[in-house]
Image (tube, rainbow, N blue to C red; front, side, top):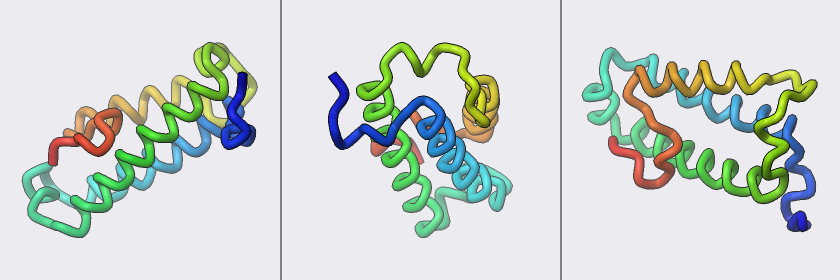
Length: 105
């Protein structure tokens, strides 16, 4: 049963919100030559932690609201492939959003 707080989290809105968080994170990370340089900037480090926490919470709520529908092909503007590519890019940049508040920075 869908939680009433998650009623606006259909697969497409989940994909769009995930992409927005990933795009913001990528933009911050690309300002720095390395993860070590990012770690030295307390403001950016804090922002990345907040985005990772927000991403992790969003993923949980989206899964609760949509379950398997998140993994099916759909007609969303933001595709699962795009999200996976961005997630891979973040991983290659040393950022693991799926760790949420426990992100190592």
